[in-house]
Amino acid sequence: MTLVRARVMDTPEDPFTGGTLRHGEDAGLLVTEGVITARGAYGSLRATFPDEEVLDLRGGVLLPGFVDTHVHYPQVRVIGSLGLPLLEWLERCALPEECRLAEPSYAEAVAREFVGGLVAAGTTSALVFGSHFAPAVDTLFAEVSRVGLRVTSGLVVSDRALPEPLLTTPDRAYEEARALAARWHGEGRTRYAVTPRFSYSTSEATLDACAAVLKDEPGTWFTSHVNENPAEVAAVNALFADALHYVGTYDAHGLVTERSVLAHNVHATDDELVLLAGRDAAVAHCPSSNSALGSGLFPLRRHVEHGVRVALGSDVGAGTGFSMLKEGLQASFMQALLGPDGLLLTPAHLLFLATRAGALALGLEVGDLGVGREFDAVWIAPGPGNPLDVGLRHAASPEDALAKVFALGTPADVAGVWVAGERL
Ligand code: GUN
Ligand code: ZN
Image: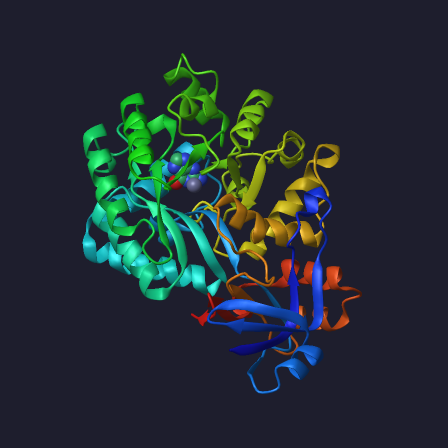
């Protein structure tokens, strides 16, 4: 057992429905075999457990490990191409790079860089968009298993509109996904996600193959893109003349359930929000990506009012890095820019979106630092004199301190990361 001593902040209850920031100025967390078994003021916990080893994390703030609900493994090397809209960015930046993962040694190097990027940013759980190449997906799973992250991922499938090396067939999509799921779904901390790239590049027959994998591999997840960019939405509507709308292109194949996470949804209609809420599906909001690609201002208020679950994604490599602090900050900027249509986000909202909301979207029993949870945590500890250090020392309240963490914190301030009590 270990007694962790830290300034702890978490959001066990949803701030969108009345929850508030939970804060322990000098808190103790007793961690037993990776699980938090007691929590309280450090002094009183120490009196009860005088002999336990103490892990002293004073200075800075201990938060639940971040949960990134949308991030692309093959795109770590193309982060930072700014200013192109989605379809042009895919063609010029992302897809040529994704073709390179056909080469196993290239994929191995990218997998190490990608997983290293997640850990360095304090992300402990992620829903990862994989590669179009099955061996490269295998490589990713092997790397996350070696490092110990909680990762849900899968083979990305498409059978049109992309460069030829990225295309598959419905039969091959099914067979390769089954083989990967058999190997990795429920193995340690890894799980499988059925992943058509987006309806634009996936025919009805391949969406059917995706549905078959979901049925034949019980408990697997579903992820894809939706309603990201107006030109993309128009193209999808033209391709699927019988569909009610973009969400309907997936729903018609039974792909929208409580185990589905759809990225973006910037240009959602009310009918789509009603459907997503009815299916209890989650949306991954990716604010830095939406800004970089000029995709639009995410209608968070309408999602919340319709009862659609929302979490945060970095969407690397359209997104500009792995930091979920940056995504939280950018989410608050975008809501401010929406004026009366936006939702004022407090620091507690940002923390919830970056942690517990993601855990709920992924069906993971993590995302806060309460008793019974596995100890997944990130210690943000800026060096002396750094503006975040100054801000934390002069913060007027716990909420103010957390606001400074989102405004000023970067991966350089991540001083420790744990998954299930294991320091990565
Ligand atoms: N839609 C289809 N593929 C992608 C991708 O790689 N990134 C983003 N942001 N949107 C997509
Ligand atoms: Zn994406």
